[in-house]
Amino acid sequence: MLQRVVRSTIIDAPIERVWAVIRDFNSHDQWHAVVDKSRIESGEKSDQVGCVRNFTLKDGHRIREQLLTLDDREHKSTYCIVEATVPLQRYVATVTLKPVTDGNRTFWHWESTFATPAGMERELREMVAQGVYEAGFDNLRRHLREGGDLRLPGSPGAASNPMPLALLVPSRRIVVRHYGGADQLVAEDHDCPAPGPGEVRIRQRAIGVNFIDVYLRRGWIPPMLAEGGTPGMEAAGSVLDVGESVNGLLPGDRVAYLGPVPGSYCRVRNVPADWVVRLPPSVEDDTAAALLLKGLTADYLVHDLGRVGPGTRLLVHAAAGGVGLLVCAWARRLGAIVIGTVSSEDKARLAREHGCEQVIVTRDYRFADAVQRLGGADVLIDGLGDAARDENLAALARRGHWISLGQATGALQPIDPNVLVAKSITFSRPVVFDYMATHEALAMRAERVWRALADGTLRTPRVERHALDAAGSAHARLESRATTGALVLVA
Ligand SMILES: NC(=O)c1ccc[n+]([C@@H]2O[C@H](COP(=O)([O-])OP(=O)(O)OC[C@H]3O[C@@H](n4cnc5c(N)ncnc54)[C@H](OP(=O)(O)O)[C@@H]3O)[C@@H](O)[C@H]2O)c1
Image 1 (cartoon, protein in one colour):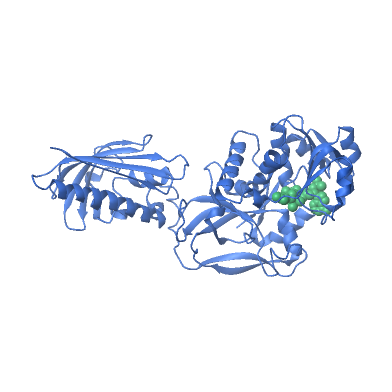
Image 2: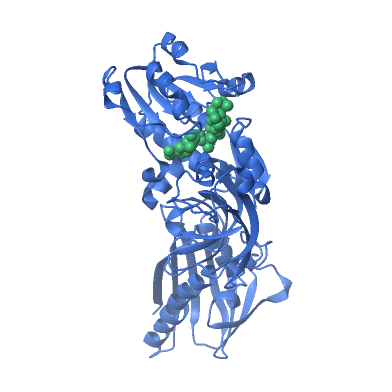
């Protein structure tokens, strides 16, 4: 009678990573603890159907197995034993992988049928189930965690260097010497320690520059960044290694992150795994760094806080800026009438190209009359702050909603509620980090941003690149009102 063994498990890695290892018929000596040596006979390729692999096991046994089918679409392979010193007869096994719906994990099913000499059924069933399949699941998990698959030919990242699993990794970072101007940003060498529990160590390649980084450098939010600290809220790159109890992220994964604790102006950084999302292959590092914080901001502004829909008259300040262009494009797609302020004709042209129907060119924050001629603003997205305060109040429509997003011109002075009552104005002072307070919320919003990019709602952002060491120049450019789109530091 034929014996049947079936085992399955979930592996915390995307199907491409697991399949890259499994489909290589000659890889077991790199990850399965029972296999000492593996070679493919007759010089055939390890993915050639019909090829025979020759195993020497750690316990001295020898097994020759033949690849019968290999299906890259179904992620399935079948093989059989052609000769063995263990008494497994007519052994045929199938490995099948399926993606788990969250896209980050893989269901692995391994089954076989075989005959045994009389009296050895139970012993050999247990050997296959535990010694080969269950042990294989655990061994492969460890192999992926240690980045071993990145050395296999044909696997993602195979061409890059093996993972540096060093305790300290040399890095470079920017610090704010003293609160003040852009010249206070200085570069220094440092070492990044190994990731702690729940942390991921990332080799960053592109770092998003945001206006909040300027506030921090000026010393406007001391509880968030002390002198000597490193600014920056987001970056993109790849995982070097992961700390204890991190699930769903592996060395070599391309990722981006944002979080409420500054420190991203550096080459290598440890961050909580909860801040991190995997990047779709189509999203480049600098696109991710240009888009993650600003795109999530645009997402919560138009969908949650602003509740923008067909016919909403939306006023966006700095409409050609990093956040501004994204808000214009997304709101227009939702059917809003988008009105923007910008400081130059060039910026006006760009804002129009991104869906801003009515552009007001003003360098001195005079826009209320023009907005009122268009019916007033139902929703106002204001990153300017104090210099635009009175004009904002005048530009709002009855029951208008003033979203005070930032303070590029200086901190907004307190607003008397009696000023709001004149037109039943509502006022919000939101911050993006409260709209991604859980990993689920972050992943959901990031997914929405990547989708909006893929379906053309958002364009690939215009990116102005600066070297990490030149972070001061990037800040000076942002503060001079000369930039459009996003700025990124290249590490
Ligand atoms: N609360 C949140 O969740 C959140 C998240 C992201 C961003 N923000 C805020 O959103 C705003 C836009 O951020 P961003 O990073 O995308 O920057 P940005 O819009 O690319 O750059 C700032 C723009 O503000 C305008 N501006 C007007 N007066 C200025 C002045 N005196 N100094 C500097 N800029 C001035 C300029 O556009 P013009 O020359 O066209 O006027 C400038 O290009 C900022 O206020 C930022 O703090 C808030």
